Every structure is written in C-alpha cells, then in structure tokens.
Amino acid sequence: MKHTSTARAQSAAIPVAVSVRHVHPSQQTLDVLFGPGHALQVKKALLQPGQFAAVETVSLVGPRGRLDGVRLLGPPRAVDQVELSRSDEIALGIDAPLRVSGDLAATPGIELEGPAGRVRLAAGVVTPVRHIHMSPADAQRLGVEDRQRVSVAVDSLGRDLVFQDVVVRVSPDFRLELHLDTDEGNAAGVGPGTTARLLPEG
Amino acid sequence: MKHTSTARAQSAAIPVAVSVRHVHPSQQTLDVLFGPGHALQVKKALLQPGQFAAVETVSLVGPRGRLDGVRLLGPPRAVDQVELSRSDEIALGIDAPLRVSGDLAATPGIELEGPAGRVRLAAGVVTPVRHIHMSPADAQRLGVEDRQRVSVAVDSLGRDLVFQDVVVRVSPDFRLELHLDTDEGNAAGVGPGTTARLLPEG
Image (cartoon, rainbow over all chains, first blue to last red):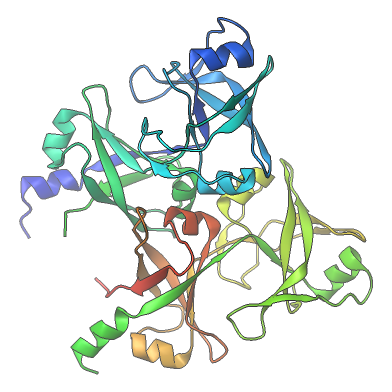
C-alpha cells in the first residue's frame, strides 16, 4: 500500500516521558520550605527547554498518608502546582481532578514539608491530563492543532495499549514528547527508549 | 454465526474489576502470620465463584519500603502468590515480572508481616497480566479462546483507552469480568460501573 506523507509522519516515533509525582513551586513557597531567597539547584535539565529537575525534594502530607522525596521542578512558577498520579492520591487520601497544566481552579490543596518549614497549599493539586508537547512545526507535520485530543499507541513488551484523550500542546518552546503519569507509564509497560505513535483519526 | 451477531456480541459490556494489591496465601503461611490453623474470615465474596476478600490484612516489607493493610484473598492456595502494581513495586523496591496467575517460576520473593509472625517468601510476587475471566459460553459468544490475547476498550470520563495484550481465561468456574491492576484502572479512569468492550481483531 502506498502511504501518504501524512500517514508516514503520523507513524513517526514520539519520545515518551513518564512524569513521576512532582511539585512546581512558587518562590514564595520555596522561601518557607527552604529559607528566604532559596534558589533551586539544577539536578538535571528536562527535554522541554529551560525546565529542570531540582536537587531539592519535599514531603507531601495528606489526610491518609505521606510521600517523601517528592522532586521539585524549576524554574519557580507564579502559582504552586502539584502533579500526582491517582495511585499517589489514594496513598495520600486526596482526590484531584484531571487537568492540563495551569488550570488550577477548584483543585484541592495539600501540605508541603521542607527542611525549613511547612506550607499548607489551599489549591493546586492535579492529576495531569496525558499530553504531547510539540512545536508548531511538529504540529503541522503531524496534522494536529493545539488542544486537539488525539490517540497514541505505545508498543511495549507485553503491555501494548492505545491512549485516547491525549491533549496536544503546541508552543515554540516545546520539544516533541508524550507525557504520561506513572500509572499510565506502568499500564503501558513504558521503559527506557519506549516511543509512541500518533494514530490517524477515526 | 452471522457477522452482524458477532459484532453485536463483541460490543457487549464487560464488567471491569480493579484488583488492588493483594496476597493469595497458603495455609502454611497463614499459620505463621496469624497462628496455627488460622481460618480466613470472609469480608466480601468476589464475583469469581468461591473467591473472597478476607477480613485479614498483612504488611509487605521490601528493600525500599513497606505497604501496610494489604488484603488477603481466600480460599488459601497451595502456593503463596502476591499481586502488585508496578507503582507498588517501585514503592517496595522490587521488580516482579508480568505473569498470569499461577505462573510463578523465577519470580521474586518478599517479606510478609502478620500479627503472629513474619514469613520470608522465596518467590511468588508478580505483576498480574490484564485478563478477562469468562465461561466457555461467554468465550463462544464472544468468539475467543482460552489464552488468546485480545484488545479491550474502556470509555471513561476523560481517560479513554484501549488495552491490548489482554489475556482471555476460560473456565466453567469463571464469570465474565475484566481484571486490571490499579495502575491500569487509574490510567483508564475506571470508576464504579465502568465497563469495557471487546474489540474486533485487526
């Protein structure tokens, strides 16, 4: 069968990143958790330009349990955001809605514990919606638009699956990468080097 | 069988059960954890005939962490089997292979802690392969066979997905039910009353 260029593009490998639970802290929160004016130290640059995993970690304290060693991501944001898997939420005893990054209205809060203090967030906890970061050029090549919901296949050793309800996020600042949470990554058997394929619609 | 009736049958709703981490203990293990001759108490009958969730729970102790309140399932089996999600395994610090129930060769062990004692299992920890229990009549109606790998769609609120690599398990003792682990259930947004659909091959 002859493939159109669109079909070829759609079968291109999309790198997969599994996001373990993490916090995007505000500077105000860092001041309380680590001391006034604390600057996050870079542990590892992430694929998305300018973003990094920090050396620093915090504890999350929920009504049912606590999770220690939760990674902070930088640079600091204007508003605190905590991203958890449903497994994490069950361990902590909280129930956070599925949201795209930054959409924090009517989300639950949680307590953060750092070496210098504690912060009780009033809101900001979300279950991240699975999404694909991409540049405008990627979007054009793949034939998709910002905010479109697409289907993506992950072929792994024994846990193949197709994720529907994957949100496309387009920005000149983004590099092509599928972001899953740990539940999703585990359900698909994602390991080092696993890639995904955008599926044609219908 | 006519093609149209097959298509209808395959779109029939399959009940979904999310299996939280649990242990199928042997009587020998129960004797150590709860005292000689201990009989499991029934908390709740499961859909699969004769199977039940017990009142009793144990703790699992791994190299990295512990999980308390882990449910025992009865009746006791000849060989201990511990079923975990990958999220559980990461919390405990162990790495268990994907297996169908009862296939325990070359699986890791773990320590179980009960009110009367501790047992160090040499093997028996698995990540359960997602599977559908069904009767021979269900299998005939759905056009599938024991051990066949099939694809199943789960439509939920915002986390639709298609599980491939779902193993069919046929027995006169089984009732129709898709079994997922908690990672898989969470990735699909499974809630009370969620059902699944068998997809046609190809």
